[in-house]
Image (cartoon, rainbow over all chains, first blue to last red; front, side):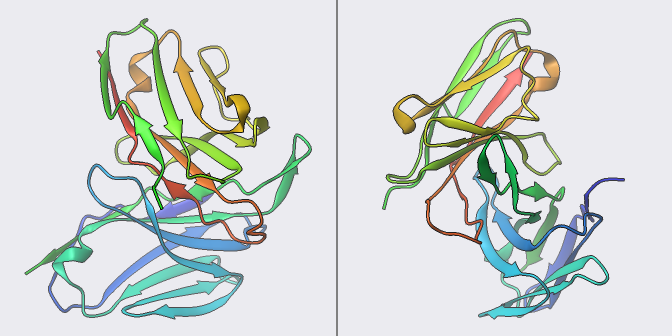
Length: 117
Length: 116
């Protein structure tokens, strides 16, 4: 079983739709949860960051974390064609290795989203 | 503020050849990461540096991959010899020290490697 599972899509929605992206995970030690957006031939960029359980809203984006169910979500309201990208969930647990603190990110496989104008 | 720089952007080599990638992190960022992203997958951490020391290289195939970060700034990742399965995008990321509890890693555009 992979540590992080994400539906790869692709997901195609009309402009203005509400988009729901989801990930599940198995490692209960994960404390930090992130969503990255990756445009074609670009590096990932951080979109949302959440610590532990709860909701976080930033403009049209809302991130939810349910640690009891080991389930995280990203909602995009009023989706725009410019939102077309691959969305990667990522998570980490603080740990120590080689004498230093490591915050290794474990990524999902990414969901390819296309918003049609 | 300039972002993470990587070069080359694209590289095509034949199997068993050697290749090297270069990364220049954001100025002042103490932590540097190299990730491998195979098509259709999320990035996988290969190695993490804190200044010029290795913090985590547990997933680095050490028989063929090596990385260094001299003087705690730029870094190079080398593959020798390359295999077909090494075809991927190699991403470099950096993070400033002092952001305890956050994992804001800033990624470069990546180097797309094709091994024929």
